[in-house]
Image 1 (spheres, rainbow, N blue to C red):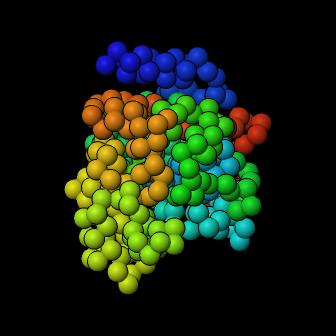
Image 2 (cartoon, rainbow, N blue to C red):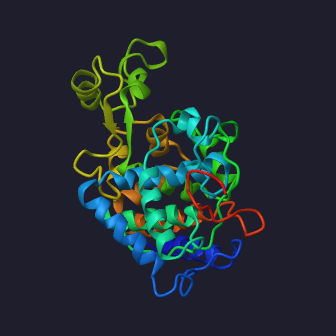
Image 3 (cartoon, rainbow, N blue to C red):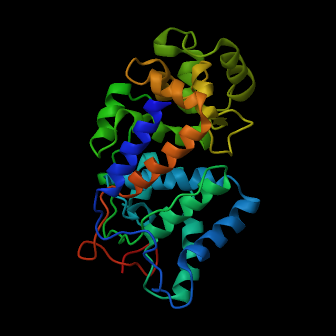
Length: 319
């Protein structure tokens, strides 16, 4: 417990002692007349979540892909066009753009030209995490929107990335080994498709056998009832009972040999990350606290200032 408390304190100090291009908690207070910007965002997210709880997965993935695709949280993934980031292969199945557009429309009516699309994406993700079982956390706002979003700039890790490569990839933008494992905890509400994992079920590394690291019963269930003859079928990355809840059951699944993606399975048994997985699996409060801090850190990667970005009138196109 002492180790866990020390880690949390270090994470908090790392956030407090850094400056992120003029962002701050409560940034929009007084900037939208009598309107509360964050309340408007929260209300629209709540309404969507009430009939579409999958929005939590959409928003977490949208934020992650926007930030890590080009190492900037700048809303560039929201831009549409023939060569936009949306056309990059890893982004083909990203969703949630429509919710961001809906919120932007409401805020443009309340106070035109004030709230960036990037801030909407960040605040909406925070609200969805809370609705899905997470804890409330403040997010600094005041980001500007990027003016460029090209598919050629997108570099995202494949699902079979090694632990060492994942640590290096996330470390490049300042994440520690522990924070990398916590960030992967976003898979608690994630899904993939059978075509992504079929080699692990039927022909692992050309052996004509399933991946021995996967639980045998789980392999039988997925291979015979979920993925057989259906490459596009969804597979939950967490327990089906918890797939719409932000909690630590994802890590418990990993310890049972039920890590669906190769990187999920690998972090549970690699010597550099196994102890973190164990700690997170044993303490949901610990996970939730770290997860919120890691999301804040993610949302502050490469933020733009007013000289580098703009406040878009439409989230799908630059001004």
